[in-house]
Image 1: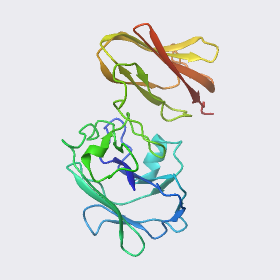
Image 2 (image 1 turned 135 degrees about the vertical axis):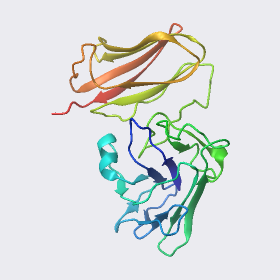
Image 3 (image 1 turned 90 degrees about the horizontal axis):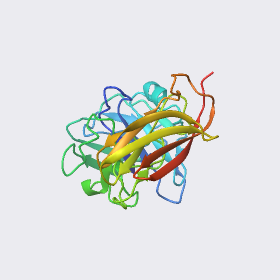
Length: 256
């Protein structure tokens, strides 16, 4: 099934169009000679021979795999390229088996009732539940910044407990160029977002300001407060808000 869709990238993170498919069955599925189309029948991409999706596996289909891999180096479950673009005015995407049977089809929009954030703002259309009907707008939401290609979806706004402080997993992880994570503030207030090394020493403060209630995104480029690239290893990122702290681990791999 179609699980995530990037139909219009942000100008400052132009990874080109891509879609993610997911095998929600309990069986391995050979999708050799299956094909992908948008709303135009002449737009066809044929999957390579020996392409097999294991149960629970994700596969990203990219319009430009070279550009995609430069921005998402951790994603290896990747095929492409398809030589047509997805419309940013609404589109229909279709997946066919080798006999021409429609396996999955999604007709998505770019405004209500569909999420509008994925239209050029750096987010993707992400399916809320892989067991749901993915042709219904109500079952889709905006992803975290830059999406989650090749892994389980994470969303811009938390679904549960909006009255609590939330902190998402960073993506990509491990990373070598940059990583991002989202956090949710239950009300307006002073917020600190900080990076620490495994010894508990402050590496860099990303945010120290008053912020409004709602979802926020932080990015870290692997540099300390002096602008130096840090050593490879495990780091902690934390959000300090209203005398509460949420923290998670991440792994930085320094390029040689």
